[in-house]
Image 1 (cartoon, rainbow, N blue to C red):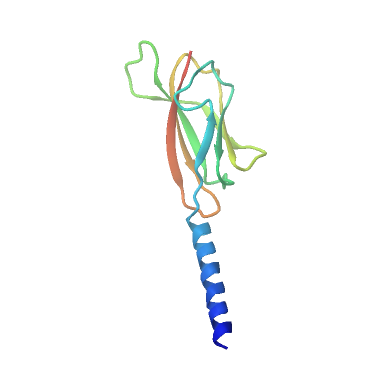
Image 2 (image 1 turned 180 degrees about the vertical axis):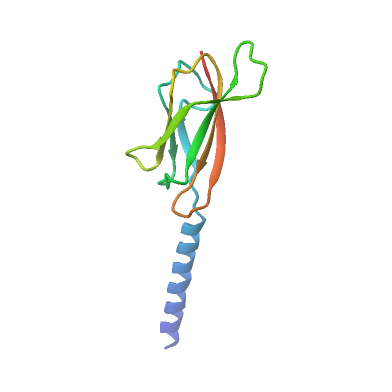
Length: 127
């Protein structure tokens, strides 16, 4: 009976570690197009790829213009649509108009099945 109890305890411990690890998993930004710090032509859309499937109703992003020749005021929000993709790990940001030459910052919020929000940002430049 002692061996059975030891085996059962080991099974519970293993299951507990598995579920604890799963509960601690959070989405991480794996890559973006354009990439952080890239200098590029105006993208028609910005793609963010995460390590986990996103809960789209709680995830989102905003696009800000942070600099351009002659700009002297605070960052300006850029009108853009944020949506999911056929790949549930991808978030798309589609600007309403072509992006002008300047520097932009993407501020994102990602929520996966663990419901813990993770935030981040990166910048890129348009020639």
